[in-house]
Image (cartoon, rainbow, N blue to C red; front, side):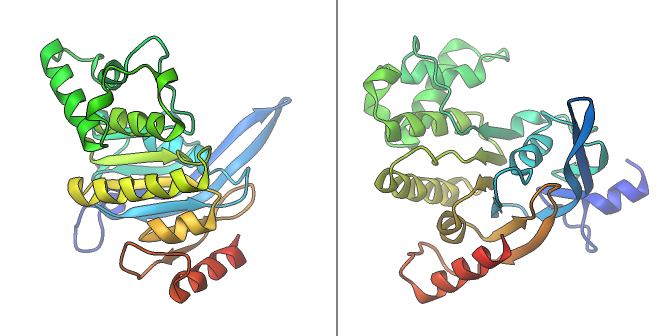
Length: 262
């Protein structure tokens, strides 16, 4: 890694951050013409933080998440993961991705769906089963390991998907609106599950959301993105202890500020 990249991937005191983006831009072809989705995005995510990406539809939030995950490469700019430039980073198992859809395989039981995240390597079958069972217990679904997806509620399916994301023991968990299709009560329960597990595992979490309340309730920082081409309009620090409630005046003030920035 050259000196410039090393400086980009660390702060002034050489403390490694989980994620650092510098000048990240991305365009896609659209009817033969380039469609600029992201422009000069700068963002730093410290280790063990929960950071929300908030913005209107089309602001490039999911594209940015895909760039962090390595699914997409930026056209320009620098991506640093755990102190290394993304092109040199080789521990992609340290990053887990939870999609908007639960993407459970209908012909597999809960435990076999969780095991799926471990099948690409050479891990013995017994060890995969042990770790999958522990992950299901972590999300309070230990007694449902033999259930098929059609036998589970929406919230339970989301917890299986979360267990599948956690079974690799990631340092960074990326989440693309994972709770958006749940009813309000179940979404609140899943928020509590995420915070409980974050407290236990101390991983870094970056999640995409359109929901101002969700951002204010969960995040340490909220990166508010502008409409396309997406840039970081402002990073808002949420200096409140968790758990939080939307009825708290302090939370309400943060929500008002975030709405004004979108």
